[in-house]
Image 1 (spheres, rainbow, N blue to C red):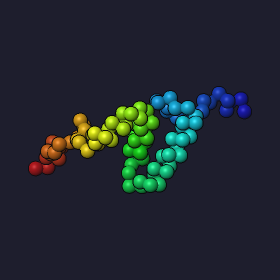
Image 2: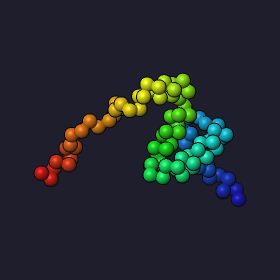
Image 3: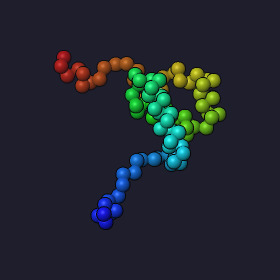
Image 4: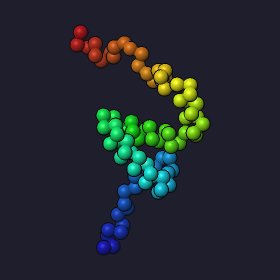
Length: 89
């Protein structure tokens, strides 16, 4: 029994410093999102939830009003071919 106490338990990452209540709400919301959007990768759902949870509501409203989600992002691939895909030619 004493040896078991020496082994530290796994602590999941919490980079946004969510409280236990916020983590429970996050877990529930992610499960509902996974049910509603089964075709989306889990990481996208997590990223979306974390972004919306940590961004001020007025900034989210501004993004929606200006329809900034319809324009290409700064990391968007604007076409072309990847050099590695040209090796077989």
